[in-house]
Image (cartoon, rainbow, N blue to C red; front, side, top):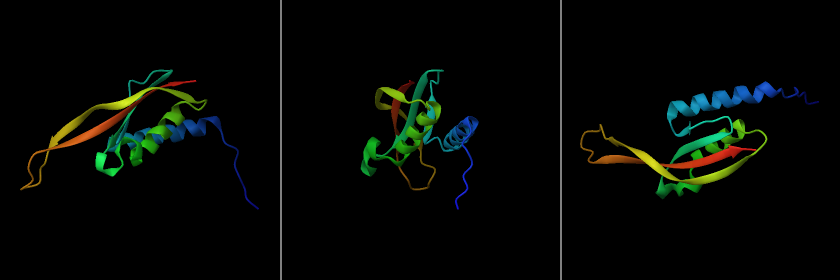
Amino acid sequence: MVLRRPSKPWTQAIWSVLFVACAGCSQAVVLTHETEQGGVVTYLFKEDRGGPMGSPHRRDALTLIEGKCPSGYRVLHDGEVPGYGSLSSVEGAEGEVRGRRWGIQFRCK
């Protein structure tokens, strides 16, 4: 016999907040320009590891969108957004490390 608890509406909200908090720590997935009706989610990707569509962070970004829009959403625009640069702190390493980000602008239904 399998026991199941009925899902409460606030449970999804709690999980969404926890997901956003964890994603915010790593900065791999970030919800920016958030409004009541939608926002923009950006995530890291590497071209040599599947590009933006093959990035493991894409799944996390879509999960975040689904958490914000439980009734569904529509993608308004997606594409590469300005990334970030950082200098290596490893002795002997040369040059700047460049992070690439992909953005998904969405509106909740």
